[in-house]
Amino acid sequence: AKDNILELSKMMRFVLYEGNKEGVPLSKEFEFIRTYIHLMRLRYTDKVKITINMPKILVDKQIPPLMLITFIENAFKHGLSYQHESFIDIKVEISDKLLFTCRNSKAEKANEEKGGVGLANVKKRLNLLYDNNYTLNIKDETDVYSVELTIPL
Image 1 (tube, rainbow, N blue to C red):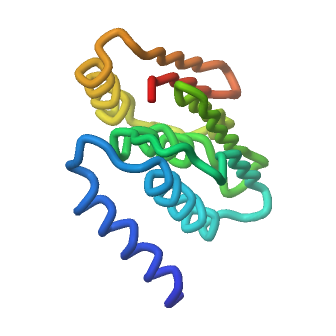
Image 2: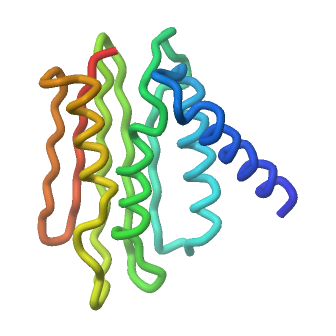
């Protein structure tokens, strides 16, 4: 528990001190994501399969802070079940662009509220930062929800 509290405090510091910056190194953003996923894994059983494929060696590029976490949070919130087999697959590829993909199963939840502000805010932020120089494809299928985001580096 002590180690997990330390990890949580690192995340909180990142949000407080890095969250309002124009850009953060990819290494810091990816460390934040890995820590978040590590802490979330503690909540779920073996019925949940979480795979993450992000480069370990990163180019010296920056990304707007907390740009990707909204999609990952949504995957955990809407995609996982404590009772049924479920999954989250996260993949990042880097070239002159960053290609982020997040796929997750869709959990059945009764009376779930629709219309959260997270995705709307990310779309507004992408438009402000990149104008039309990005692609965001969201597929909401019967059993799988997927997001693919490409942004320049």
